[in-house]
Image (cartoon, rainbow, N blue to C red):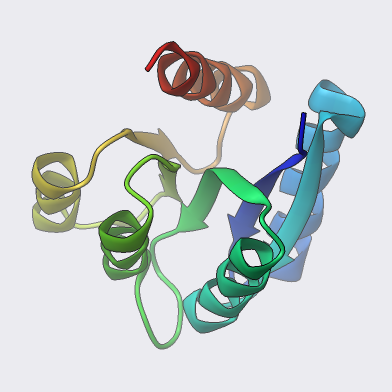
Length: 134
């Protein structure tokens, strides 16, 4: 079976390092782990993975980032890759952005910052299980 990718997007390097470490520790070598410090960089990574026939399983994205905010980024991803599980990780997203994502994007979850590692892992596991059931 081909490897799948988990992508983390945040403009703070320490957050990206922490997310990647927690995910790698839990999931081991089941996945390819990619990080991006902006939505624009993440879209480039997604295109590269798609070109290499690597399925994107999960995207964990911050909301408040320079350039494109996380809600717009996840909606953009959803238009092209509706089966990708999308997780918004934030302490600052406005309610309208969250409601829009809930209405328009499939497979969406919200995890507040600072996040609880076990909660984040459970959200990802649940998202992957729902995705695999289809």
